[in-house]
Image 1 (tube, rainbow, N blue to C red):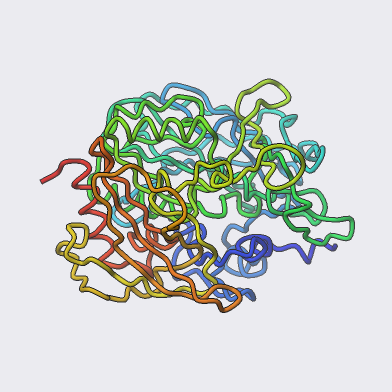
Image 2 (image 1 turned 90 degrees about the vertical axis):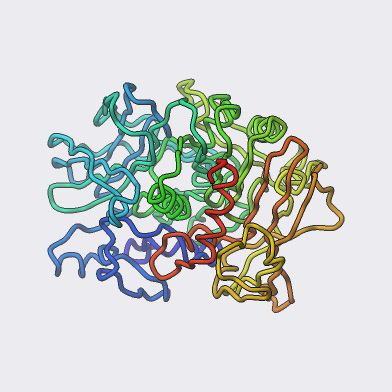
Length: 485
């Protein structure tokens, strides 16, 4: 397949057969006035078209065919005072720089530039290694070491890599510490990597969903990778497919002054999260892939009175394992056998520990086109002062994927339980389905909320998708968890 046939958006939401209109979300370098509709019908940032980028004299997005500039970090999360290593390839070799942004509200800007690196010497790194569909760049040379100052704020960060001739790519990372806070935000980096098809070159790239054949055709799940590596860039622009879900929540929560700590899913897996330090754990976006240690920590959190908030659908669906890189660095390989080969099933619900036993509802299926969320039990405190009325339709809020209550699956132990939305939609075959939003109180007093849709976080702070009823309902929930008046 020729390079001209590989575009950054072709193997995104469309290739994964997921209609996710909320993908990456607005960042400070993606202005609303600089977006246009590409041939997929989706909004595409202006710099995704090289000709349009040149015409405007602005940066252009690197791709996985020419690899103008691509990179990854040695760790997903780092503490203030620690170092973060960046491994970057630049073709043709030339100088490049790294701008570090922190995601937040910042008077509506969405992020703030923190530092810019010195001019760095870029080299062409070796091609990615591939073995049994597992693609890794662990053999790339170190390009730049960022010593994170002790005074940096914890949070979600993006490194923007830019070549001297104006090509750009991105590397997300997290700055965390273990200080107590009201809420701990957990970034779903396992799910981000599961969907990562780097390199999107028509030959080498593979995710847990797709791979290429010798003719450059995109293959399905049966031929995809079983193990994927964190030692590689993210495909396309370098941002994970669903990263915008988390960024939407962050901007909104920081705007209203919630006391947030930050970590990622691998921190949860590795035991670096002590749930007793927080009133609530927030899972802000598509969080589909969970290891056994992750689930045990969350069960312990709920038993200890720490609330759980799942702001997206299809959480805790696949059971996975994490392993070390070839050089022995822990938690750099993500394995999920799904339904292939010998061994136990990989769906949590197929090993008699359905996700509903924690979340209260569970994954029901994809939503081909956005549908209204239908409000139920409006007299509940979650909807208080939201302006919602019984049966209210919140346009477009059931989107991407949906959860619902499964009567045949066990429910968690609870003191009380309520469904706060019941919304009809049709699946890809036109069959009527429904979505539900759930809240229950565990015997420990912990609240467990599940939105049951991809579109809840975007409704908090995504331009064009904000809904005041969802903003108020979320504030009611978090205020109660944080014990605010």
